[in-house]
Length: 326
Image 1 (cartoon, rainbow, N blue to C red):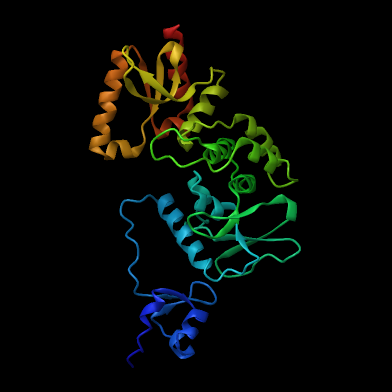
Image 2 (cartoon, one colour):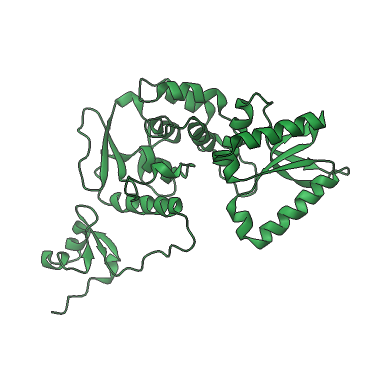
């Protein structure tokens, strides 16, 4: 049997209420060409899926969580809001990949919360949370227009799922990151807002949050930069400056280095995988390293292995460079 075409104005994602208002009969909403990801919502099955391209598993999971959250927002009751990992995804905080998926490698269920005494949500694909009134601040996302926990309160909630102390600091660094480069967005929050959120009440991971606060910095541009800094400091070495601008003898900008000991002219640069895949970026990196060397700087190039598996080697190289320069 040929299906009745849907009204053009409905689009590929619509609520049952919208469809009924457009005159679509209930029988048409049960047709096999429509998917129902959440109660009260319909999605046209043959809508073209987003191309995965060269995304990593973490990037794919992040995109899936964001897309599902925006779908659920279409039918989310007014007393609910996104929290924990889902809120962090929407705020684009640097989450570790292990919290983005479940034990089977599937994207994590949506974190949806309510204020007590309301009961936590119970829906397929939703991980419900009940939070105390004073232990959360809820705002509307400026871009997505959905209710979610504020950046500072999102961070304190993440202590319940992010167990790595370095990642907890990196997430806070992401909240307070200042504008350093052209096109950078305004900081999501401030150090005082993080402190107030930690003081708002008892919660899972409160000790880790209190220990992380003094280690938060506003000039870390990535999760790996934060980890690199903390590894160096925890080894008893001086704390390097973050995203330090280096100039030549006539005041021309040579470049901004990830971590630096300016008095010793030591630069520590993280080499992300995208640097190797992008020929243009790779060529720029080589030219910048040569310019730094010409200005008397010693460059330590760091990879993913150094900040996740080979910490001892990283510390040894930095310590050796400091000794030689002194």
